[in-house]
Image (cartoon, rainbow, N blue to C red; front, side, top):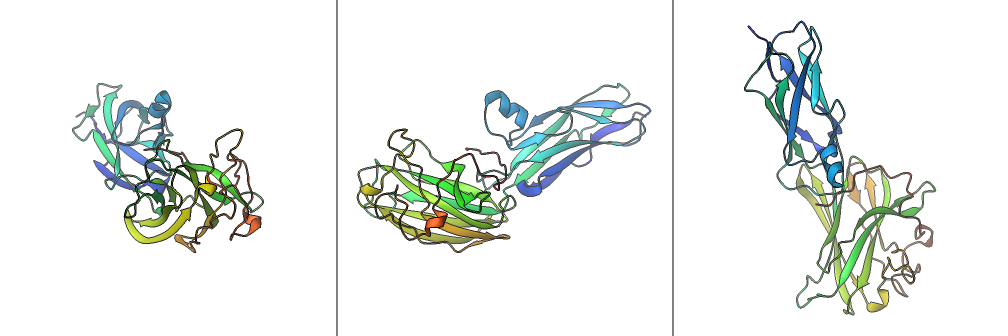
Length: 302
């Protein structure tokens, strides 16, 4: 009888923080030659090759041969190696899926069985969801207000510095948000800029909410209120008049815990001022793309 080819399991559950996983193709008995198997990728998660073609974000990368796997002569298994990427996107409640389907085998003496597909469910990893909202209170209809949210983290000199992690949607719609994965984030102090980009409201009230996500569920929530005036506005991307957003709030990460969420500093002379309640040594401006200690993530927008 012909050796039968299948996946070793029809389903597999993983976590986004697992980093590297494998899908195993199997023969029910060894064969006398190498066999090469062609496969296709489907599912809701996006692979790097497909994303690169459209210059879009991706969730995983095939690090073994792309769309091809070999079972060596005399052996019964071959491995498809997959690297999962941590990112700043909060995934849907339902896990994303990577579906791999066997399409071809280069030897007619091998039989492809009905177990020719595996579905890998990728669950949102633990982390901290940071949300900036405005115009949400009674009578607060802020149709012309735009705010932007930026992350700060320690640089090589252990000063807090602006990172390239931001939520700057080009609209006047609340909220702005990003997700910080626990597994990838080093322990230490982090900070936020809650930039009042433009608007006619004075005062303009806003809320920063920190939601810890554990096992794909809300573990704890901390809400901090703030209020800016028009004097605090800063069009930070204006090449002539704009100045980088400044640090107005800090928090700590220790292991799997996020804590010590500070109040929001209201600058004394506008959102471009470096005076206020926070220590001056941590209010240090820096380049957006220069942060050696921050892990390399794929920044996704969903």
